[in-house]
Image (cartoon, rainbow, N blue to C red; front, side, top):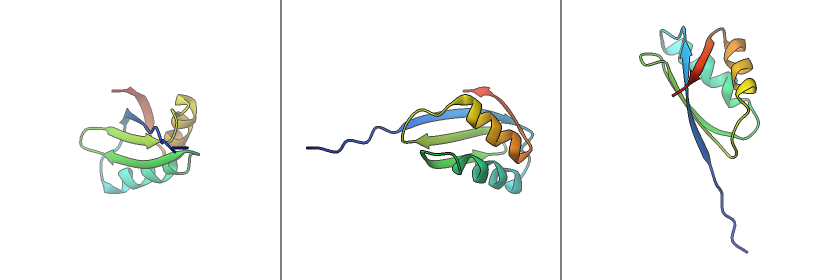
Length: 76
């Protein structure tokens, strides 16, 4: 029996990030969501790339970004 892992990569747009601290706050909150494998937030572009073991619920991601103090503007 082969164990295949299908990871899902989604790029979100987050507004309000301006520095490394912002990136860390967003990364920390999204990383806490179930199934998240990795998060890369880039303040300069406002892009947050999330790799997860299954597609994430957009509302869960929005809530995590809100908790960090920023706004989820959508997906890229």
